[in-house]
Image 1 (spheres, rainbow, N blue to C red):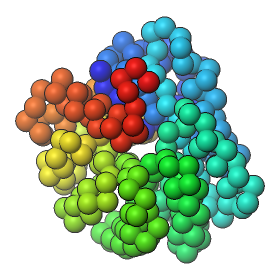
Image 2: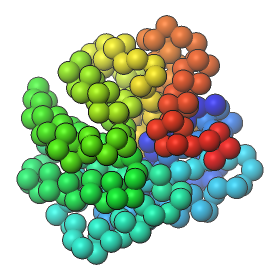
Image 3: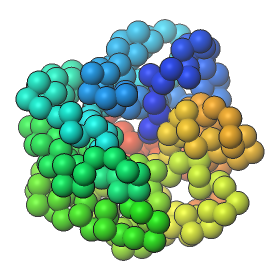
Image 4: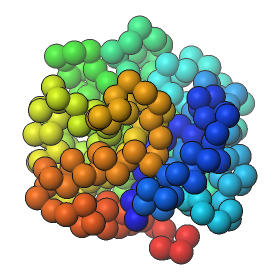
Length: 273
């Protein structure tokens, strides 16, 4: 079965049918989902963990894992209390990663230096808790400054930990692929790889070795074709996986087996976990 390595299950867009949606997800062949714990800000980053505890153990539903972190645009809110909350969440066994954290220079959000400072502080917490990180990196169109600043930060504050992480919703090129792999990161592709104008992204996916690849939805956003424009669900990760399988020249079953094994290896999970 597949793992959806990135979904915002606490989104209000699932408030009316969250359990039914998870049931559809399992029936679609998705055995596990990583619920991203950023909410609408640090005051909500516990919600992913709450969902794990609410739904895990119920028959017919995927296994849920949680993360916790402060999104780049919310880094001005980071203070000692927020860092203490993050540390406490990452101490819980269901919270297997820190994220999504990183840099976003595309939108007008937090000042870039504040984002970088906030990232470093979260890297320190994640390192102390020995949790891999889930990275969001989005530069302005046609620029690579966010990526350059990200790798400089990771090289200084993260590489030495050996913990690695995930490059979420990857949208860069060959240089960033190699740097990510060299630093122990898996590279995750979302539904936008299925879009007609996304050939550069499909070309990037072709370069990523299968043993370094993950698949995700970023639900409720980035719905894959043919339902682009509607609410995304973790069960739709099967569509993205099918496209990636075609790109890599393997069967969907082989793609599922490889990406699931990659996820378990990164987070030191057993199949029964």
